Image 1 (cartoon, one colour):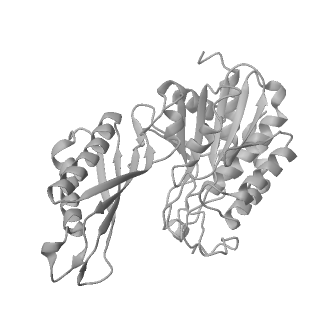
Image 2 (cartoon, helix red, strand yellow):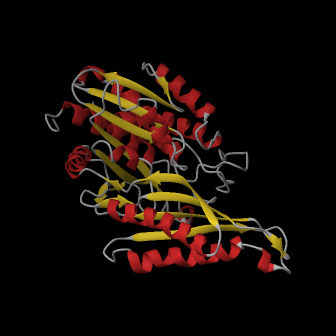
Length: 393
């Protein structure tokens, strides 16, 4: 089957599916509308979907190698200001990262692969994932047995990008880290409250928090290897309810991001040690909660090169490649890539005019639906070619 030609025939259907997810945007793990819609569509396409954790999975083909195709489908907790006629009306959820595209493209890939199932010499497993934005979805589905029955040998995911760039660029990294780790943390500082007129009776958690903040910045300046890329950000500092009262507690929340596993281990460990010791110096204590724990996204070079060749074979007009992409943002597909060989690629879905003035996670962002058949074809082409190849085991 020529998957690109077939995807062009199904273009309006892909767009309709995309717009359903878009207007019915949901966030987090619990996504009842998206879950039900995916189950309905996969059943309509002849598959037998199953609930997996808070997501949906399905399998087609049999025997041979097993490739996992992943699409996240969650939105962000923010208003939408795109001006699209199908904008989410709630004012509290919006598909500003493009996950609606991923779900729609993978649905059509499943349909095409089911149509061509007789030509498959292996197994394809589909992963429709919630809660990528909160870094919970992959772990949730893995815990529910996603990578077993049958065991998965490799995985592939695509992610659309916005902004002012031509449609049809696919971007990858087949040599180094593609996206950084993310370890989100919450430090609750416990002191002793007092009236502001009598600070000698207090253990001031705000004072402790300022010293913890400054000490954490020194981890980047003095303990991180300059050859590694490391970022430590404190995005929240909350304490107190009145100008003349020293509170009992203060809270710092932040993230650590790195491009190397060893740098990640060092910074997370030292963040905890420094916070505890600084609090101890000033008479307080800390409680540290890890909110997210996602490794760097490092794609398998051999697998990535195989998928690049499969994409090139389709000869999609205007499609070009860009290698060596690396970003300090994070992606919970890295949890899968840490366990099995995996590849993650970007597909450009931007506009070269005023519609492309905004990037992802902006309430005004708009994505180009011309990417829909491209993404669906890439999923299907890579899946069939890989399970039918004699490569990788």
